[in-house]
Length: 413
Image 1 (cartoon, one colour):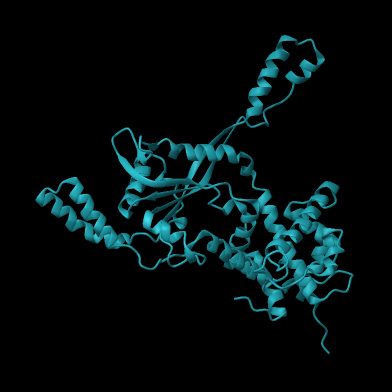
Image 2 (cartoon, one colour):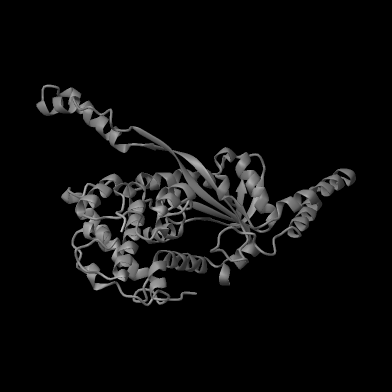
């Protein structure tokens, strides 16, 4: 028998790695977390490249805590013991015996010194993917500024939100433009668990790519006013068109190309016959109603065909002033009055240049526009938010458990 050439190992490619690097595949869809581990030394090097020094007891304990949390998360959302719609599976007992995260990595590629079954190795891979997602959720640096971000973004909208004496709601500026609103809603802070679930079904599995942590929903009485709101927000610099993320824009409310063709004749009629504004408004409103989508041409697989709205994502430059520096400067002033004190001298000699006084960064926010009739339909039946969330959870469940489901011939409709 011919001897295997020693150089072949240099040309043994991990094709899933190429799929991620070159073809847009997500690491969540890889079978073994993309790396073969033969010993704990390789695991240590992998984690160091990832950003963790597992030889540091503090960082090692942090990773083990994330491992324990991933187990709890899986049981709560993906298995029937925590979710009636979950999978009828049990976490293998072997995984409860792990006391070092290195053993989890070795188990995922079947290299552990314990004899484990194929399914147990697949379970280790599932847990690693959930751990990865939890880490990306927790390590978003901008999260610490969330209250400041929320205030600065919402304040731009609140500036133009008014109520009259009859408690009717309007979007209004000082130049006479006034658009009646049925409702104006701000999105509450997304829970940590919902962020993890969303990341588990997204192609880009990083927290920085979540664009709907902050959002507003504006509900008008008709579709015409929904379009007028967009113009209002643009003209009053609430949204900056230059900072819109194009790939996030979605319209299932009004067929704009169709409307654009039909509006020209209405413009000509208004000029020719001198239509009063009220008449023009009514005619245009009727025209827009004829240009609505009967079936949503949506790109989001979790949305119902009955869901009708305009979505877009803007980005705002957030300005954060570090409160520590103002407090420190007050203490510094007191130290200047007592320079002879050794403690004052140490304080005055402190180098504060590495401490940021001001932090500026762009942060995304989502705007949803719809009319009252569409809003009622959106919140009922298949188009409801609860159904949308359930679809997301099922998608994440099927995605990360697919190898185990295939192994056990489990069907999940």
